[in-house]
Image (tube, rainbow, N blue to C red; front, side, top):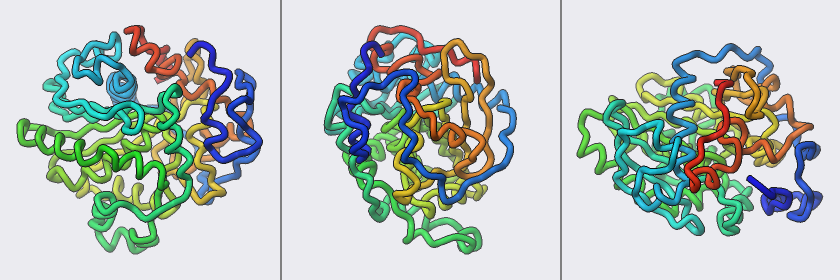
Length: 350
């Protein structure tokens, strides 16, 4: 990422002890004020299956990286390795402005029969993008998201608080609502053009990951249940309260909903620990943790059972490092590499 030693992100998290002028280095620690989550699993992580490895290395990382690329935003599938990993992909639509509205692209991949939605993450050069992250206050879910949760069978939801108690970040919801109507319309158009579609695949990195999660939940109402909705993201911050996390888990666990979710966390990346659990936020299950996020590491990724597993990313809460936010998946903040057409960082750990 080059000269990444002054970042406006930290004070946007609301912590006066960390300002935009505070140095950030390989030894910088930003986890001293983060407490343990409400629902903290202590289950043992398990080995990473090969089929999921293919999904993440070929789709999650590559499509999320492509979302940062200016040429992709212009409607051209030319961004070096990020695009070359899926050479048959056809962009159908791109939107957003990279400032007030996060950029995104939507298209069709014929070999996999997938409609893909890729969401741009936070461009550190665009201040307005980071302002959305100030929105740590929680609000009720937008009706497009709440509708999906309300459809869960009562027998499933009876064991947890009801969907009207679910809350999510006002900032993330504001950012998401700026473009969701466009995303919804374009996905509907893709479904009409490709009746043989088997999946809607949604991905993003950082802020784009949070928006992608909201996208996917809402899009479950757009497609017939025979079309799977899969959201696979990297560097995702916490999106909502424990009720939101529980309902997302239940959405995944309800076979009739045909919904898949996973999130990749890189070693000591601090972004997945925001918003802090003490402010009422909690992650859902299905974390995939990379124990060593450096590009020269071959440490295998791990599946982390339960919500907020204390043996995975949460084990690093006192030793977080902002420079690991791009992590092993990208090698450096991906918009820089995407613009130059360079390959992402090593992903051997998958």
